[in-house]
Image 1 (cartoon, rainbow, N blue to C red):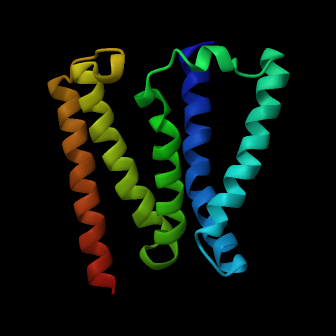
Image 2 (image 1 turned 120 degrees about the vertical axis):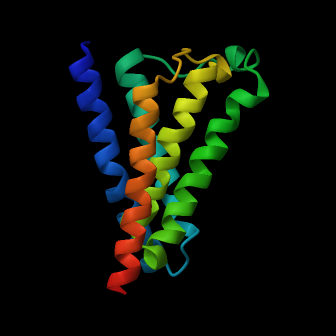
Length: 153
């Protein structure tokens, strides 16, 4: 698969994050309890992942191989749960644009940090001066959007 395909796939996944946040917040309102929406979301997500694994690999994860994983390797489940719960609960009162903007800026800053130092055995890619300028512009953009919102309120 080419870089363009990876980029388009990544962009599609990113574009759906605010949609997921709004829909899950709405589901939480419908259910009368915001924390129930992530339970439903993860149930449906689990079934979708199970189906994708079967369709694309013809198998399910090996229980015996799971024993070889380090405990920290399972933290991704806790992290995604924290993210989904946070977006579900914050979107109605903070606004989906604010939630996603703060989350996106934090993702870019911390992913740069992770790659710069090769943390968690990731691909080490030192942060260049130009990339640092880009990150600084993102932080400035976050600051400007918050000033604009405060003036509009």
